[in-house]
Image 1 (spheres, one colour):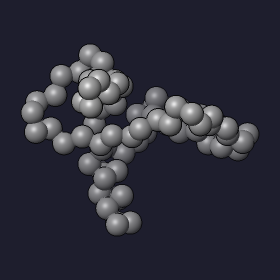
Image 2 (spheres, helix red, strand yellow):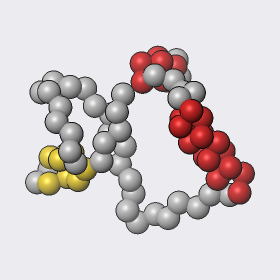
Image 3 (cartoon, one colour):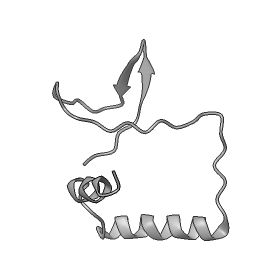
Image 4 (cartoon, one colour):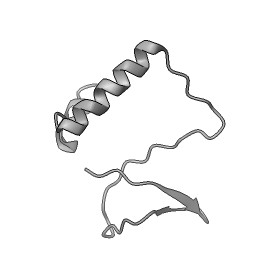
Length: 73
């Protein structure tokens, strides 16, 4: 799994610096531009701990993540 950013241009998602083969399945998460994200001290600590885990390579593969996510419907 990879993370990419981009913008919608004429109704099509244009990714920055990433070429995908036609038919590639993607998951799109849209950032709300008008909402501020405010984290409590506890939420920020949890986020920072998660980032540290990822930096160490202590994480799920994309396949494992989606497998677990499917359990919740």
